[in-house]
Length: 627
Ligand code: ADP
Image (cartoon, rainbow, N blue to C red):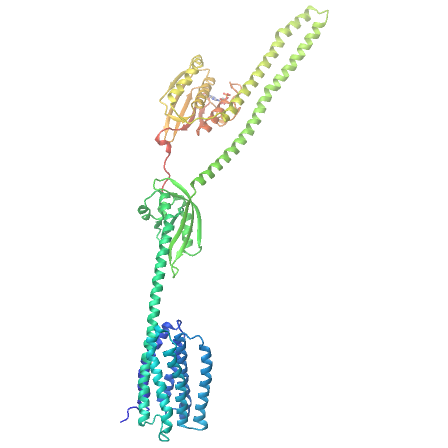
């Protein structure tokens, strides 16, 4: 019984080929980009499979179709196998050998067609096929055995030997088959044909096995290279992560990776900036360290980043330190996302700009003060010139009058015959008119002098250095009262001083404030009752507030708000000064970070208040609220 007939051979071919195919396809899917060899082998496999299928279906398709296409497909497949091998061993002149082999393939196909249609001959076709296979397998054997590097020779030896065996079988067939009985069909059995088929079958299996081993060795090599590369990449990544961590931790700028939940992953600078320990700060969210008033703008910036509306944000905002103090920061932040676009963390850089901000605020305050001072100065110049003009005009008028009187007197006295009546009139001028005019001139110049003195005192205030010392107000007020004891006694005033809190200021300047206020209380005392003067004070947290109260004539509602203005007199007829005393008081207090105000009722008395910074621990002020 002959098992190697036309039916069983293709079936067993198909079975073993199927397994090879599955392996080849899976290798091709994975490694096709690494080497074109796998694509060529897969194509070769497909062509061989197609030719085997054509043999298997012989009888069911027109004979001429299977005869015409089977052999060219098989030869084409073998050529592709050879090209794949050339790529596999890394030959550089594949294109040249491809051109040459294509020409031989075309010739072989032409001869095959001739022996199929032109001059149908089984022997001719067989001989042609054997020749073609010998040419291709010969090249393959040469390539595998002689053209490879020493390291890959162990893997290429088996396929090389199988190809060499194919060559031997092919040559044998070339010489033996034409000598066989005529009409003996290639697949119509016969001992030689059966032997050839069996050998071929075994060789194909050995070839598939050898090629797989060979590919396997290469795949193993690639795998090793891949592992080495990955290891290298992982090491590089680890190293770069380490470097990033170092740069992040030791950056002089505050940095934080803020998680979408709000939790902070701060660096050392930020930890230091906010005064926490790293562990404490890691427990907090950005909302916990943001100043309450700045929460809303920060939240809306974070929301826009998370929603993808913006890529980055820059904010000037306040943060609250662990001790409750507030710092101004310049914050730049951007969002990092993972490959799927999910937010990973906000990468923020935080710069402490508190000093810059304070300097800016101070500058603005100075500018405002300067503008206010300029307006005040203009006002002062206007009022001063107006007030100086009045006595000046009056002095001028009386000097003119005096000159005229003296001229008249001179003319009268020059005459020889002066009557007694005239003599009497002249005596009256000398005794009454001239002293009267001189009195007005004196009053005018005195007022001018007083005004100029007041202006001088005012201008001196801005130029003299002012100290900031802790003041014992009890002893300061006692000293002032001692210095004006005579005036107080003469006014018949009774003075009560209660316990006065300490404050911070300049002793000379504060003494002038107290002295001015007491002086006014005496000047504007009521003619109907004796003056009662009380000086009291209280501590109001960061300020010390003092009050000088009298039961004098008081100030009417309309004048109260003007009494601190320069040259203002509530009632010029009752006024006993130049209207500069209270102006000096406010100027001094302004320089000492204090202020003055008044409560008064006409006819009943006045309470003049002034405040100064308190001394002691409370002077630090209350802490601003935490977010
Ligand atoms: P003056 O040198 O004219 O006293 P001040 O600046 O000291 O100038 O006071 C301005 C005006 O305020 C005074 O002219 C007076 O009308 C009013 N005044 C000040 N102190 C008192 C007081 N204790 N009682 C009533 N009026 C006062």
